[in-house]
Image (cartoon, rainbow, N blue to C red; front, side, top):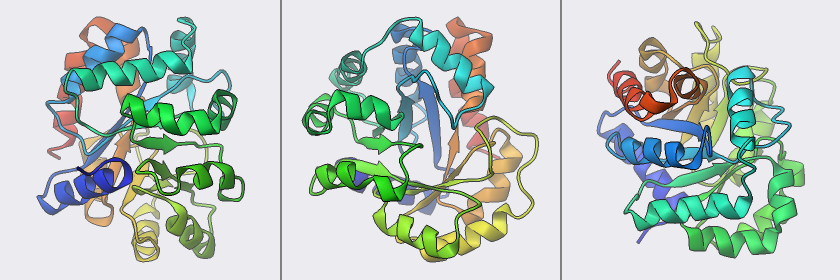
Length: 265
């Protein structure tokens, strides 16, 4: 049975081949509480995204904008531990939740947990890999070495400021997909996307042996329709997190409906 990076890669490419919009949702775990997170994720099973990013909250999320920062504050009010995060993932697997889950968090969280311990306990819980936005390629060696030979993905990021040579290096190191940050700055839903984004994606696609996903700012069906021919998947985060902020009780249904609309631009 495929797991981790291979499963994520296969699901992204299969959905793209079948003319679906492979949307990768981002949510912050424990926002506003464990049960709401769980309810949203179980509802998302009906949307069947290729994978999803489940963030573990961090007190200094330097890559994130106000919407996700506020989500992390709400989550941190519950004082979650990384052990509880893994228990949440395990409880979802016990309920038959089969969508690959990537832990998106900052390196300090993983380092303090213990990299050797991380590998065994993440696999046992049913996690499929990691996205670590503050971990550049030059400093990723310790984590990459521990994940080598395991099915767990380590999704690396590149940005508009990355040269083609650097993007090619990151693309060779990433596992699962290559995450292209569409703009300089922080996360957040935008009315419009950078005018050169399509041209940059064309170049990145030629440099990456892995599928390419683009994120930051995607929040409208028009964004999906514009980008889908030039990328393999699209990450949607702040637009979903805002729905939790507006009405936590209705969030499982409103997030599902929102994603279904995005998938049919």
